Length: 201
Image (cartoon, rainbow, N blue to C red; front, side, top):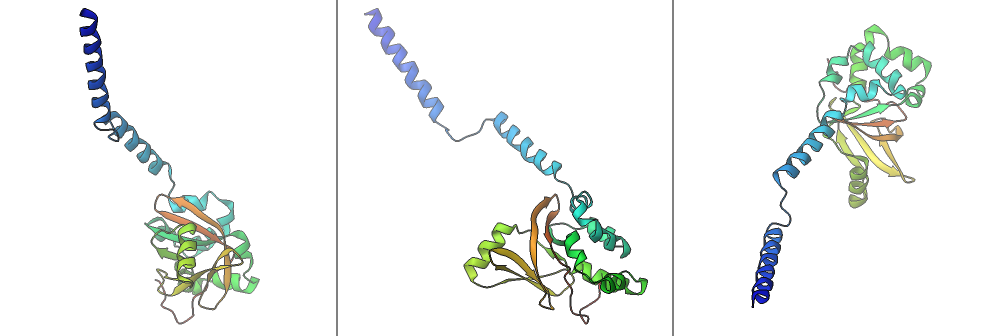
């Protein structure tokens, strides 16, 4: 009789234990939630601002030289939730010597700022989302830059491309460099807006 009672008691305890464990199967403990929050916060804090992403990659040295000439560093540092389509070294090299020298002239500082701001779009979109949107619509994705004029993104020969108002098309060769305040998409050319577009001062 004692054995029967013991068996019944053990069975009861096992059933109760299973019930307690399965009551909230998907619910995290306070400890688990804290660890998850800490991991998420650590990921955010390890991301560098866009300016540092550009500064620490030699590919963008020449682009940052133009930013320096235009006295545009403060604007770059103040960016938040943006995409920067930054010309790589190969992109800057596509400018002729005359075009590059002309951009650096003191009297053309406003024009240079205009060009720089034409490479920045509000909102963050990674390359995978851009590609899926283009494929779903069957049309290029048009985006308005903070300069005011538009750029177009498209897929050409399985490559993501960007086109300016002069219909110059370049490859987005170095996409998805995530920063704490946006994302950098490296491009192999310099985008140029129409001369009569508004000048960023």
